[in-house]
Length: 465
Image (cartoon, rainbow, N blue to C red):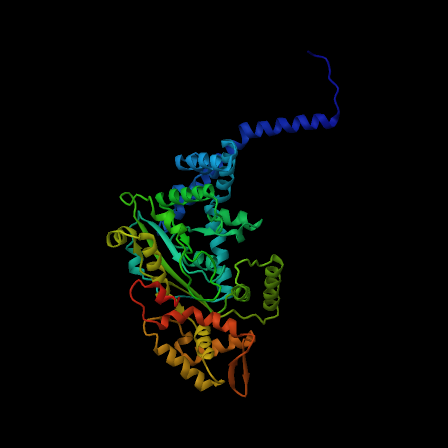
């Protein structure tokens, strides 16, 4: 027992390494986790004192615990058995596949990261790139929402900036949980997005097991009162206009939810821009008839470096205005009393109609609408008259005129379009270039539906479909 043992140095190092890991995992790591967990709870308690809607415990649950809860959910278990039978694979294989889906979907929310970094970053990005304007926001309606209700922001999808912009503007209300598509599953972006509380969805997946895992996660979050943000159009608008709503996530939220214990309130959010960064990609996708488009990281980095270089040289200008309006909410309990049949379809159309009604009217869409239908080049007075005629046709729209001056709004819109070579000026007259016509139409389409006089709840008329 007291004799010496000779061994190679490398083996001694390996043994000591394993011993250190074992000691840390059994004695040190639990204490460290407890310490950081306690600090997080204190941070959240302070945050909840100033937030309009406190962060729900569901959102703060450990990711591992939430994954376990999800994959052992009775409905998911039934789906696992059915998947194994249908695909002819062992149940343990189907179980591991469900676990993989759960790991992909479930976020790892960090209150410190969300409120300490994400909100500040969202504010910096939004105000650096745009003149941000909050239009109609139905403040009385929003404050009257039941504190125990689950709030769901329902938004049109113009740009990937939508996430950043609404996160910034909703910072004082609570932490939003977004449904994000496959574009966000790029490392290291995916880690940051999960830490901000977003959950990934495969928009085109037809796998029944995957949809059951996703459905149960959304249902659990809704039942727990987590504030969510969804895009019913299911993707970015390719032509600039509002699109027909998809029913998937709305169906998961509504069906099976126990309204006797917690109501669900949908808040319409309408977003518009003087410039959408992805506009050329979106218009090209519309022209070739496919949604299979992808912005390369190299393109994004080149764009960011270009803007930084312009700022250093003192030649940087923001990209016009970004407007957001919050409409009167839709109370699900009351809606079901009025519309007991075909609830999901009617709810989706009602929400899209309300979003369309709230769309902010900004300088570029106004000028684009005026120039697009002109049969001949317009000089400045003729252009201002045409824009004024358009404004007169929109008495109930949420119009934003910089400095409350129509002439200056026209100047802002023209300057933006000229700078991007979508419009050209010859002898004081403006006309849309042949290459820029599709993009000018893209911006005009964002307010085109407002010229209609739709019936209440008639989405097809509201969106000019």
